[in-house]
Image (cartoon, rainbow, N blue to C red; front, side):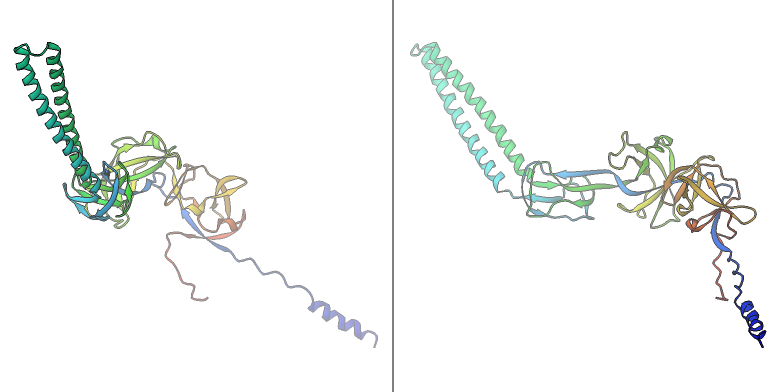
Length: 361
């Protein structure tokens, strides 16, 4: 009877033994395969469409704006009235200038009559030569005052005309900067008008890349509204100095064949062909940092992941360009790189493979 407890304990110990841990499932990773031709990834910059000729209009005099006849987006023709200032002050100035002109004309007539009489009196020896010279001087001064008054009257008339802002060329209003009721100063921009017949795309190039471009270099423009459409273009202007805030250089790309699909203010991509050793374009999530150095995770021949150090050339809107060095056919992990462990067994799925549904799930 004393052996019974020991016999019962053996099955209990066997039942309490830990089960072996389940095998770790193989992680599925999304990979991008470095293919032939990717080392020549083109340089793509996003920019906005602008008119080559765009000017800010302003009044030549200051005053209160009483009427604005155009809005942004409206087409105008040369000579069209765009805005008006309060004309009361300039009208009073014109009236004052005209009155001064009339007074100067009366003074000249009087001085001329006095000189003629003095000439006759001097001929009869009734007045001295000095008196005649004084009359001649008074006549010359009256003539000068008349010329001055006439010029001031013309200036006042011009000032009155300056109270009306007219379009100096055909174009499209791209911005209305003031509203009726505001008091504007002379030279303050109130409207922006663009000539839509010549259009270009303004892009900003990093300072380390601007040396690769030159005036006249060909490019291709692709509007965001119609990505399948391409327009031939060429660099027209490169800013001589970098922007103080962004440290990039403004580059204007002319599009001679621009049409309605490239509307002013819209967004377009400017594509520059690159040389063979320009770099390899990878999705932005593929590049991580390991031990403080830029790196990517690659899948080797045994389906295990390892890190490979890379050198970043520059960032783009569609990814990151790294210096050539990865062999053709290299599978680079492009998603979930922060969860990987060196030597981990994975199942690679191409980023261009069709999506498959897990029916069993």
